[in-house]
Length: 196
Image (tube, rainbow, N blue to C red):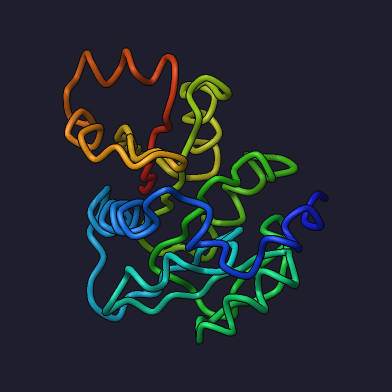
């Protein structure tokens, strides 16, 4: 795979990857908690392809476990005291069930998306949360893969917090209906929560 390309940027990844890291990760974390079935204090969130695990800092009250295939990313995250495991998202199964599994900026790493969803379903008790570029993947195709894997429910929400520029006004447009759908034709992603 292409994990090597992240080696040089692992140190400071979460702080340097986004124009406003705090806003980006805090908004993502809020949607992890609230999209689909709500998470409760003490629930375990497994974050596949987690990078350095920066999302952990924005999920207080939840136990965060990150998984990444880059040794450098895992080392960087552990250096911040985060619980990270070195493994490929296509092969990893946690030793205990988790309440939520997340996959951000990495669904394209799935060798077979349906198989990945099936694997995640075997150890996830409440929901799977992931982001999706609707210009790259048809939502109907993803929905079919989810159904085949046992996820019968799907809730989506536009995610308009850009990585490279701090534009807080865009977050307001996430719930704007037609404007949000129009923006998604050209930019940004959908956050998806799948459950049964």
